[in-house]
Image (tube, rainbow, N blue to C red; front, side, top):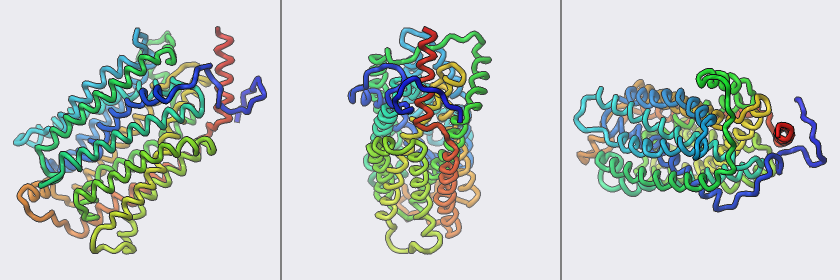
Length: 498
């Protein structure tokens, strides 16, 4: 490994290196972190409820829904690098991040409402077109806000530990927003007679979520405006915008740290998408849970994701970020795969009441470990952006987080597509349970082979993909020592240029 000489006798890591910025207060971190409400609410609404709403409640074919959601994600994944690059290059009186964030908020609110208000009585083709357009609109609007928002967070501090603290607060607020989404869905709007099959309840549910988006995003933008002095200035480029983007993308994939994180994210987000997309189906038909029991298990996941945030700081102070990431991803993969596999091989009896306590406990622990991994991941991406400046001479936080978002959305689209095609292939009947529940009939009974197939895809397949992501993370080489050397070299370079 190439080393960079340090000019002082301090330990060669990045704690305290970089720009001479005062430490952020808790209020500043929380104020910034409220922006995570937008992604926490919108993403969980579509990840948990949308596939079930479109297929089982509205009766659309699962494969077409999978294609519609995948199309939205793939289009957005292509747009993400454009947003990231444009945000990095923008010069305005409000900085280079806030204008894009302001554009994303109303689009997120409108698209969220559209997704959960599919018109009754329309032909299937028109409904799929509506779903596709709203999906593209929502994903693009989320990106307009989240990519500059994450990049702004990376710019608030250069300190190795403080970056992890910022990421932890952002993660914690996002998980609170996700839990609020679950509680409002299962516990308020979709509870009572008819449960999840109440078609008319989804619109007020979505409108309430849109209001939460406005509150959280608005507060974060106000705080970021107050901390504008911490943001990096855009560096003027001499090449045209399209040529600049092509050059920047080439530089991005020449960085081994980014390549490793990108591939790991692809694998992990595909696993997560499969598990979340089929979550209500698996919990209803494989585990035979009631809506109340599904809420308990789902909240256990988000409870774990929230409880894990305070663990990240102590772990990241004692262990390398890569180590924390690998431990967390393995923990999540085990939580996804082990309970379902035990049932499939006959070690967990398929009779009596569903093992809600076991499932809730497993997913709680997996969520806690995954929280530490996600916080480490976000902090590692910010460190890789510093390495990018050292290697190529420009600040590209927006493009780095766009690359992460590209991996997330392309993988989520692939996961949704796999889920839709799988349900179609195993003969899952569209709309049957919604019609039966509305009529007061008994829950839909599926053939044993169909139930087993849902379990295999939902559990072992998702778990194996998560474990593959953990193996990929082992190839990441940017540790605290190397990062400290890079920051000192950058500080010296900036000093020479001034």
